[in-house]
Length: 408
Ligand SMILES: [Zn+2]
Image 1 (cartoon, protein in one colour):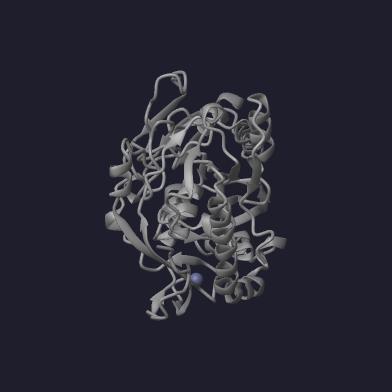
Image 2 (cartoon, protein in one colour):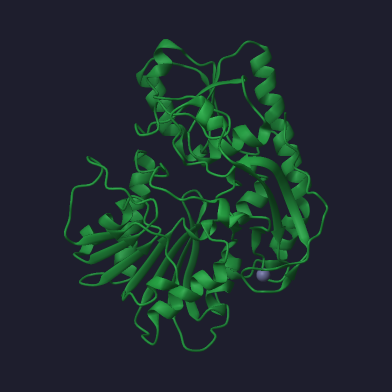
């Protein structure tokens, strides 16, 4: 059954987790979605039996922060059985390497100690510390030392745990946090903990990378909305939270095809006023929020029609990308037998099953024996890489990437 994108209409008076103002605007609702989209499931049955919850996004008109106001933190069980790593893609690797070099230079990392909060499997931290001979400590509940993934190093250590106030005593010259803040519900106390960890020192540097929610709102990109992401920031909302919690934001920009916010900040003892171009986005964000319900409905209807008409014509349809976007695309649209399989280049995902729907995850070479007529690519940035990969195997399916184009 297809899910509805309409909010429930029940306006629960909520307090914004970022700025503490009362929030009443509800943007979007998706009922009964799997609570994890990066977990690996060994059978289709286990994948379909995964716990589900509803998601309902609220938007703060005061600071522009968007959040799942019915997010159930207690149900989230972070474990090491996750496969969120994007480091099997050449394009992503090149981006991460370049970003590590940039962060190492901007935060003057040589000889310093770096803490990465939400370090995943530690690839970026290793890259960062390799660049300039720094030392690192990674904290992540999903950290797992897989053989063959990284060579051991005495420069970088890891703590397999969630970051919380119990780590405020740790000392760091540089704090890095990539693709983590969107998983945190109490964002204000999280950023506050980092500020308290820095304490009195004024020479620390903070580097954050977080998905940009403005693009999601503008494009009606429902595939970028899923249960683990309980917090959604525009560049301005991101910077407003940091300024409020005692940082001066020194650089704010978009990267990776404008999908990610890159933010550099330093601790300050008094409030620093907004001064960067991307910070002035509140009016624009309010407009995007007002238009989002209709926008997302159009985009969802467009994709449902596209998939169902190809399927009715007997086409074999596969998704390319077994990550969260793929899980959200399948579960939000209520797709089952229309999609034959999900292709993923990450060998740790192949042979497993998609959370929620139980679609099998296969290697690209599996398409040689069972060719696809239509490949739906979950992230447009990977299209050149995928075209090349298919060309090498002599396959010529139609390739379309997730984008709002054609459904406006
Ligand atoms: Zn707010």
